[in-house]
Length: 434
Image: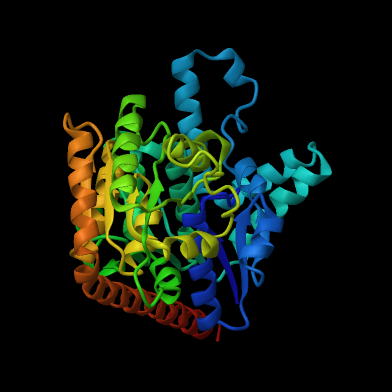
């Protein structure tokens, strides 16, 4: 039994994505103890630390497989931009429709490359061509904000589906999807995925239905990482205020909003005589939570490292345990807090983050307030929300933990369903051979 896991976070520098990957590998290993579980990554050393039983497959091979402008060579340099656009789309269609032909062509091209690149490509192709199951672990990548990756992900799923390989997607945050090209590919491929487990029921299932996915192929399970945080929960509430704010192109956070959030946090911390606790998730240089958190804490805690040393999901979760309230503009600090019975104030501006945090709030039912970072009364509303969360912390703890338990159970049920799908597929294949 060979299982390929596509996790999207190849650098393994996002602790939320890593947490979901850890749960995926653990649950798959429980269902198939003898299986070889392979994970696409460009950080094999980190994979060995986070998921010691998984086997790395170089994501560089994936990039080579999906690289544009390979098939038609010199035509790309001679043609107009409009023709190049159509050639690129035709090339992607060929790769998707005739994967075996594309496989042979890329092997031929690969022989002209360095030995390392050739080996990476060969390893990737072997992983997708001989897999018994292809799994997409938890993530929020099927949306307009990450269109280039989302399209290649759909191409990958389409390729393995055409080869008759079972597919499953767990812990998915889906949407918004308005881009016509992305919608077309989603309509073409997602209806054939065997099971799609979404993180929330507010927007994801309806969007998937509009894309032609049958309701019986969609289940709502919550985020897979809920399990890690819930299992680490403390017996008593903490006393600090957890802090995170994602500053990236897809979050659309302005410098003015950052200052207003900073002022509200300092005021709340002084009011309750409590520390501001860094809860970084992304350690990627282009969107470092550590850098943003340091700025938010400047003037209140000038000695904080912004959480630089919290380089595993377990370390971040341990810090969450110290909190009575978490204020975050990033998704996974909210997941880690709510799963431990700790109320959250979520901060969002982009449609991407608004959907994520409102969906999370609905999943837990209580204890999660969401404030728009574009609100003219942002600082005032944030101060009020922190006060409300602080005062309600004990009251919401029990229902939050109950909601976490329910979502964990739903997650296990979804994995069990995939086990049954694969078992039925293997039985059918065996009978066909016999």
